[in-house]
Image (cartoon, rainbow, N blue to C red):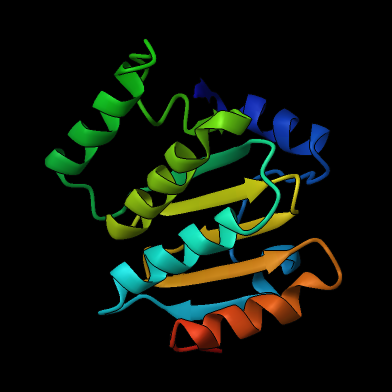
Length: 167
């Protein structure tokens, strides 16, 4: 895992086919996908994300933490320790994005799911499968794909996990 700044995250996304300034759920590439509630279903939502990433090509990924409105000291301590494990001591606000290599798929999934559990806003992007997931502090996850055929499969997958599609 490499930890990068916002500007570096923009460059990384652009170099990997997803030019974006700041990920937001109202970005049509994210917001026009499927949305489901994680209220009372966090373990199921985590299992869905795990499965969605594990059954698609993975050549590395990005988890970009965008906001932590319900900041808790213990939650930030965990994320700070994870970041320190790769020798990075910068504050999350100064370097909010995390780039994962192909052999770090579990780490990528784990960090995104942790952000979702903490009700932090975060983007997960996997270039090989063009998979996008956006965790919102409103306990809604947005998923989409930049690939044409994949959204239909994502809808089937969500139904299999009995997650409540909203909006």
